[in-house]
Structures are given as structure tokens and as C-alpha cells.
Amino acid sequence: MDLSYTAKQNAFRMEARSWLEENAPGEPLRSFDTPEGFEDHREWEKKLHAGGFAMVPWPKEYGGRGADLLEWLIFEEEYYRVGAPGRVNQNGIFLLGPTIMEYGTPEQKARFLPPMASSEEVWAQGWSEPNAGSDMANIQTTALIDGDDYVINGQKTWASRGAYAHWLFGMFRTDPDSSRHNGLTFVLVPLDTPGVTVRPIEKINGKKAFAEVFLDDARVPRANRLGEEGAGWSVAMATAGFERGLMLRSPARFQNTAHRLVELYRETRDQGVFIDAGLKDTVARCWMDAEAYALNTYQTVSRLLSGGKIGAEASLNKIFWSELDITMHEAALSLLGARGELLSGAPAAGNVGEWLDGFIFALAGPIYAGTNEIQRNIIAERILGLPRK
Image 1 (tube, one colour):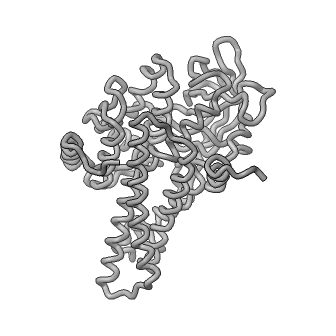
Image 2 (spheres, one colour):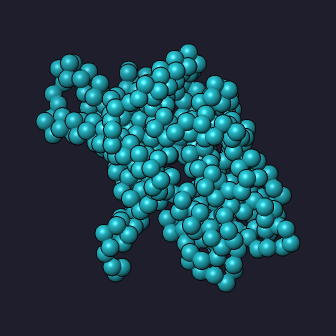
Image 3 (cartoon, helix red, strand yellow):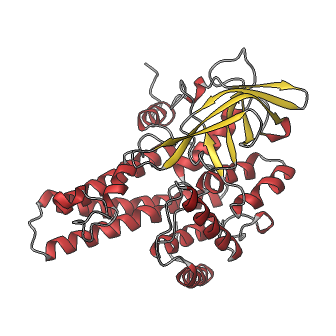
């Protein structure tokens, strides 16, 4: 792997840096887990799209820039460098979009990708069900064929972005006599379909980041099927590969956090606060691990550009970045001491920043995108070749 950038890549970096410095919001947008903040973020996404930076690696005809994945990594570095807003449509552009590129028909690509790139249509992820969390093979929601439609009955829960999204993607059991991985089909569902009820789920801070979705005889065209009938597991695993191994959590996210952690360490040290040697080592390790994750991602992208695919090693990535995120935030809260228990708006918070909020979110990392316990099982079976118990 050549770690040097080409002249073209350096020129792209400077173009992206210049555009972002000129256009990125000077102040944080309102949370996209609120109605107002959701629309704020959609407006930002539209601005990104107009500037040609909504989805850098997508073909131009689908709303992208026609760049490669290396340039996407460069863009992500510049995006996080300026502190640009979180991507409200990340389920669509980072997970479903690449899956449609791989499995979609020409008509589906033309229909779904351009409004996804501009966030005219925002997507929710519909994996989990009340009895099918990390064990997605236990999905029970049915989508039975009736003419040109699927008639869907069941429930999805913990649908990310579901409270305000326009569409949901997920797996449904199209063969009612099937079990486990068999008989599942990947279907795209408009959330304004008659028979679909969306009930937001509030987080502890009162914001609506998730939703449970009830489907009662909801009719969805069979043309909304992605991939082959009954082959939904394979399509979903491709989506999960993008989620765990590459697109959802770019290395720039963790490099940015590691950089802020080092700055916090220096500020704390310069104030004369005693810092335990073990905590100092943890800060150094976090910085090195964030860099290691970045190098590993560059290696993965290089392999993909050479015709390779993302495989079971995505589970290694997922465990690594989710546990690194927790460790970095725990180190920050230790450096802050008692102030680390304060949110940034508290009267005595000072310059505490968003470390507590980030820590609370990081705790979800080992759960979403497939629990780390399940990822360790995948590693044991598919990478190490260990037998099932």
C-alpha cells in the first residue's frame, strides 16, 4: 500500500477544504433528533449536494462526484477537520446506497439514489424486531405476495432515524414456512404507506432518535424488492459489511476524537492537574489506535479498488472502532474529573464540551450494527474456523 497522495488527490483535498471552510455552518445545527434540527440537517445536505460533495464516490448521474473511495476518505478527513454537521441520512447514503449500487436494477438506481444523495428522501433502518435484535435470522414480519404487491404485517423497532424519515429498508419473511436465514427478502418501504404506523421512541434526553414501526396489511409494490426473492440475507449482509467495515464510521471520526482527547490532556496537564501515568498511557494508546484504524481502512479501500470485497473481517473493524470510541470518551471524562459529569449547557460546565454526550452515545456502539458478542462469534467461526459449541 502506497501511503503517499497523488497530485490529483492533493488537489481534491484542497478543493474540499476550501469549500468546507467557506460553507460549513459556523455554529452547531440543532439536533437532527428534533423536527427543527432534522430539517436544518436536510438543508445542509442539500447544500452539500449542490456543491458536489454529498456522496463523493457515487457516479455523477446518481448525485455523486464520480470519485473513488480514497478521495472519499480524504473528504471525510476534511469534513471532520472543520467540525461539519453529522449526516442525517447516513443510513441511506452510507449503507443502503452502496447496497443499491450492488444489487439494484437500473430503474431502482435511477429512482432511489438521486433523492437519497440530496436528502430529499431520508431513510430509516428497519432491521430489529421485538424478538429479533442481533439475531436478525429470527425476523418474523411477513411480506406475502398478492399480485404485484407485498402485503406486510409485523413490527420493526429501534428504527434509526425512523421518527422523521420518509422510507424504511429492511428484511421481511416472504416465505411463511421458512426459518432462520431462508425465505427472507430485502424490501424498501415508504413510511407514508397506508397501514404503516410510526411511533417515535424518545431517548433519555427526550429526543426522538428511533421509532417503532407497525405494519398492518401495508401494501408495497414488489418492484421495491432489492435483490432476488428469498435472498434477503445475502443483500442484508452486504449492507452490514458497509456498516461494520467501512462506510458508517470513517476513520476521520475517531482521529478527530483522538485529537481532541490529546488536546484535553495537554490543557489538563498545563493547568497543573495531577494525571495518573496509566491515564497518560491510555491517551497515547487511543491516538495510536485511531491512526491504526485509519491505516487499516486505507488498506481495505485499496483492496476494494483492486477488485476485492468486504468479508467477515468487517466484524473485526466493528469491534475495534466501537470499543475505541468508549475508551477515548472514558479517558476524557477521567481527565475532566467531576466536571465530566456535566453537559455542556450546565452553569458550571465551563469548556467541558460534548464529552459526556459523546460517551453516552459511544456506549451504544457495541450494540448497533450487530452486537460485539455476535461479531466475536462471526470472527470465531468464519475467520478462525472454530467449531460451533
